[in-house]
Length: 417
Length: 192
Image (tube, rainbow over all chains, first blue to last red; front, side, top):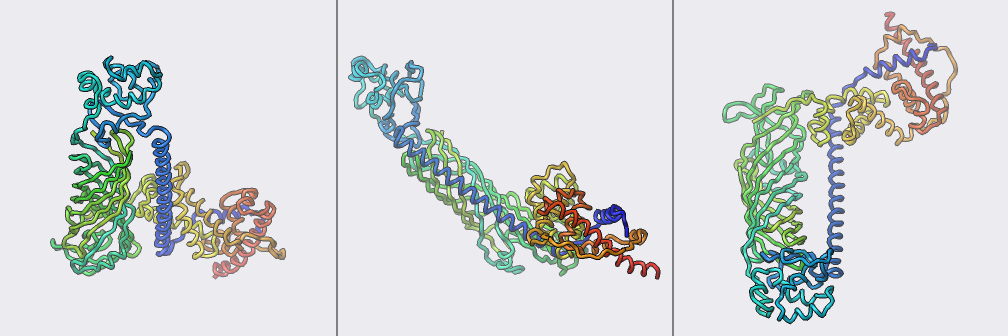
């Protein structure tokens, strides 16, 4: 019997450290499937998290709006200036009057016409000529309660250049003036999560659309961009801009076959819904009819879109609903496919950077329903469900015609000028 | 147009790509370490099928926990630990570690010729270890291969420290017996 256990231990240990074993060929496929499941679980978790965040934001915004509307001031936070009425604001200046508007600035000193802040109306009132009826009221009332004065004099006080100072005592004609609409621009930034799908039509022989649909699945896609709205009427705008869209398509394993290119070279043809590519792996010397297997692939498509839409605005207090519809020209900026080609035990990774039979641009219908919340006179936050549907195919002379469509939900911010 | 991506040799880049979820890089990492890791798993399993199940679970854990890898230790050692944890998890989930009975065993003299022992290949030694019951195998592996103390092994396996010591002792005696049997067969081969 070996008394020295350490001797045995060391022999076992050295064997343990040096031992290697070749895994079965199908093992990576199982791990790959497991990773797909993990990705899906993570994706679902992410969706749930976003749902929670969205619900929380909606809840917070609702509470804030209720507080702002009912408990604080009906019009608090609405700022005005002598230059121009708010794009989203009321046409009638009386609507912009600060109903709950009281008090002096915190330092107690009146501030004159150069301010758009709250609490500085008293100073404006002090410019009213002595014969004005309201002057007496100021003298007789506590200075902390000039509400009705503010209500009456606010528009003039904010526009000293053309207001009471020039036109004399406040009268009905001076106090209420119709607000003439001036066209203006607003710029938005929007980021959107898109669920992209496609409609395939058989075009040329080579593979069936069912096979392609079975091996391809769209993954999380997103888009972001800027848009410019030109409000040519108070509630109507034309919208254009630039949108960057990234679409990710997972492609399952497939067998690819060698065929002759137009140049005479023999290459393997890799077929996707958005075009096909010829690849020449270095694994084998191929001849027409040979086949290779490919692993799962990631297919990235990047589009730059140029939309042109018409937009209508319905406003309720700080909220606005903005349905819009139009067209978009979608330009293909980049198309890549990354996969692994296997030949028996040999593996080679390949990246396809150019697809054949893919159009450089396609047209789509664009529609969206934006919900905006006005934060300040110039800035708004928006949430915008959208729908896009291709009216021309993004492929030409491919085995299938591909009409992509997507449903998206975006959030963004807008600034008016 | 085709451009071949070179095999990623920079480990840091490879890890980052794996963390980003790039399946090709994950496949490359698997190709790099699968043989070694399966070699480790084999010692903790009773056969290759079981070892591959551990390896599969282990690699899924590796990709899940890779964002937490801090590059301070070697990736291979880190992965090896994950594989061992996957093996422990497998055995824990199947409640195979509840060893309450000691090895029934008559003391006899097992002559193991040290010279012959040196002729044994790693695969022969592996087969011998795989013949141990799961509990004995775990204690033996953790003590001998991973260098853990009985206190640590007891905590990991959820057994008493004394049980860990006795399991190790029994495992060694069984291994000697198995080695002796193997030794006899091997000696015959050498003599011929």
